[in-house]
Amino acid sequence: MRYRTLLAWHLLWKQKLRLLVAVSGIAFANMLIFIQLGFQGALFDSNCRLQLALDADLVVLNRLFATVSSPYDFPRDKLLMCLKDPAVRAVAPLYLRNAEWKNPVDRSKRRLLVIGQEPDNPAFRAQLCERSPLLLRDLRTVFFDRNSRPEFGPIARLMADGPIESEADNHRVRVIGLFRLGASFAADGNVLCSSSTYLDIFPNQSSHQIQVGVIRLHDSGQAVACRDRLQQLLGPDQLVLTQADFAERERQYWRTSTSIGFIFGLGVVIGFIVGVVIVYQVLSSDVNDHLAEYATLKAMGYSDFYLLGVFAQESLFLAILGFIPGISIALAIYHKAAQATTLPLAMNEQRALGVFLATLAMCFLSGFVASFKLRSADPAEIF
Image (cartoon, rainbow, N blue to C red):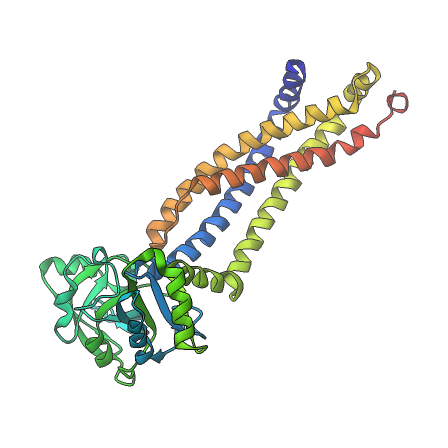
């Protein structure tokens, strides 16, 4: 075993330039896979921020509601009907619609998501806001999302001197506070306001129509049983979901109903194929250059299984050597991209382990294919 390991390492180290090319190729493939998985994860996580920030055990939606970026209305009375169930402690309406925000510095306009809730009965967790939501009782006052993209203006910095004024859909609003939600692939920024201010910004929106109904229970452990009862009560036009299912519905939309999820998945496959091709070329060249030496080993009695073990160890060395720079470069790109886009790009143990296992698979697969020529070689014919 020790001799086989030394032989595998010697074969790689003898051709240093070829080893460098192989490691660089594997690192590039790793980096490509990490970037695709990172942006795919950021796509799902960022678009579920709103759902997971709700102070909710259950939510009510129009059955056609598939994504926050294109919500459907349903009657507010349907939400109030949920109070008939003894397990329901409180309900809260939530309004969602996109609007054009005017940058208070350069006067440029960019679309963001306007979120309306009742200040006395907020739908979001209290920790989301840096100031009390009760301050939004005043008409045309809003909280701006501190984690929005910078194109909306340096709102947080400007507010160091006090409230500032801007416009949402050509309606004057006053920014009096900040909250933290974050940009997503669907919305580059967010504004939180009262339901009264929301209806003032969107005069064609009826107060009797809402986009999301938040339900809080006396006992969160009864969420599934209560969900089933409320679904029967509200009928087929509405959909009652747990908070986790609400987030998963958003993920499923981006995963299956848009081309973005497919593109990121395709990028992962391409990265894997690139790695397989590069490692195969390196190991195949190794076979061609040392075919006589391998044939000598076979003539001495070493089995194909033994030589296959040498290739497996070469593949293991290449996988480890290529993975280290690959993940290092990916971490640097994650950091820069997260700063530039405000998306939740971060490495996690599950992704790192998954890519490492994929790297092992690509290297072992390449080694197995490259060994075909060696296994079919006849020492008598070579000499």
